[in-house]
Length: 112
Length: 113
Image (cartoon, rainbow over all chains, first blue to last red):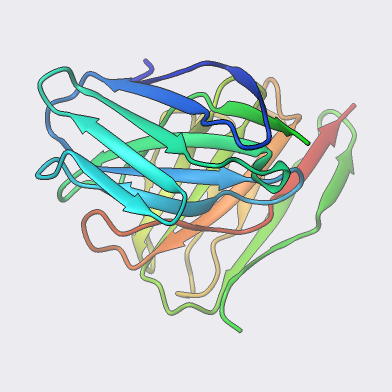
């Protein structure tokens, strides 16, 4: 069963655009929500993470918005660059449980 | 330079053969994980281990086996019982504390024909 639903499956934007990737979760016990970035042929790498006690977190050009009541969170990439072209995964886990649940991934293409 | 090493990067096997994928970490992490990645399905957990000589099944453990004899090593065996073994396999580690981020290796692409 997929506990974290991610959309869209793929996304194409022009350089400088602001791609937005959305995730929704079901388990209200989740309390840690990371985003991972994966380049072709590589393993995913942690990009940014948020906990449910804040509604937004920004690191450089990457921002997570979190809506606890709606059980949704999203990744925004400001001033996107061709080098941001990658697959992005949202994930969720709960305290005292190392079983992290991943979304299906979004393949982002940023055109020059 | 600390990290996770998976070998080999590409692996080819005939149907009916068992194959073992290597994963070594020098991050001094307690927990290690194996994920399977298929297009459009995200990452699915096969097995994880929080301490040496102990491991737990994930969602798709059938047809796989693991061992954790050393803290640094967590090899995965894909047995002939795995019905659809061709996939990209990712090993990861974490400090093992709640909500610790995962550190991934660069994966092994297994093709079984």
